[in-house]
Image 1 (cartoon, rainbow over the protein chains, first blue to last red):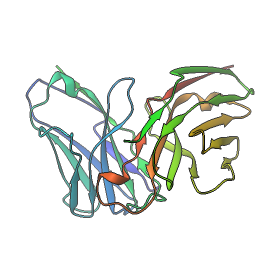
Image 2: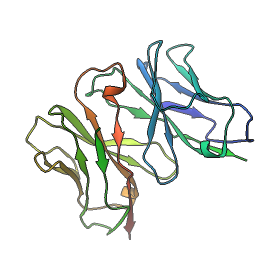
Image 3: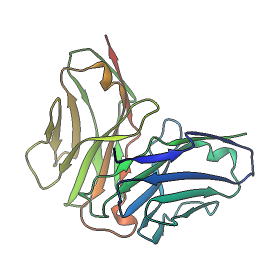
Length: 114
Length: 119
């Protein structure tokens, strides 16, 4: 089945130690999104790619970066994780940016910062 | 700025009964979409139902239906014949209509309602 895959499902890192979260998709969608979801809060968009075009949300900390080497893969890099970065990170894809395009979500990666 | 409010952090329903989850939103736009997403424990978020603001008819998907009150900016989700598999976090979300390349077209989520289904 076509899907959005996130690895790992659980990631533990140390304060200040760089970490990379991975997302891949078999849907061949043009758009890939990264959301941060803290406990008991709504998912919050960090950034998205439309093909190779990167769009960063204004309030996304500089500590967070992303790479999309090809259509299928997108990575979230956290350069120096702080305790406040502990959260579920959700990857999503959509065929296009128009509103009618459904966003398909991966299962998420739960990041713990020690 | 657009906001989405879900006033019920938790809800509970007996199996086979009906439950309604509330959602209100604030926007000055006339063209937008509203969504309900379901996030089961440790599983991915999936789209349950969507409503286009310019459509007066309430959307329905099997046991799931919405009550869309545009003037009141209300978008509630009704789950009929509740099943154990309906237990999940439910998020209401808003997105302005159109084709956006920047932040204007972001999906804005409410904080969610945790639904428990009792056997």
